[in-house]
Image 1 (spheres, rainbow, N blue to C red):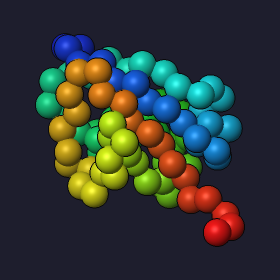
Image 2 (image 1 turned 180 degrees about the horizontal axis):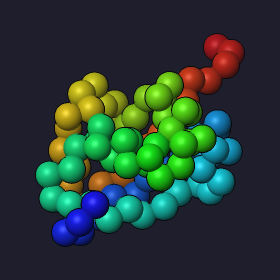
Image 3 (image 1 turned 120 degrees about the vertical axis):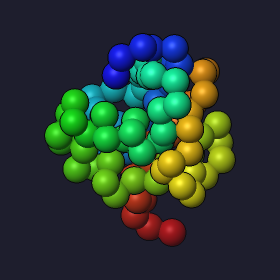
Image 4 (image 1 turned 30 degrees about the horizontal axis):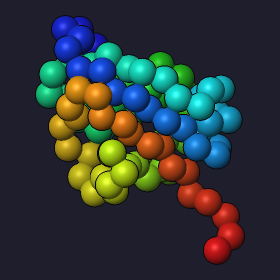
Amino acid sequence: MADVAVKVTVRYFAAARSAAGFDDEIIGLAPGTTVGALVQHLGERDPELGKVLSRCSYLCDGIAVRDLRMTLGDAQTVDVLPPFAGG
């Protein structure tokens, strides 16, 4: 991802944390990058994480992402939430 002008924090939970191998990271993105493009980038970088990401839900600054075409802005936080077992 060239022309880094936007930095977002990605926080991983449960199985996503296990697949990533860490709790969170800061990712530099090009302006106009969408949540979907971020997810694609993460999955291409780490295929095992990509398998988990395909089943995840996402929050951006605490609000559910309903459309992966949502554009990310600087200093936003994306939470990666795999399906949780139980009630």
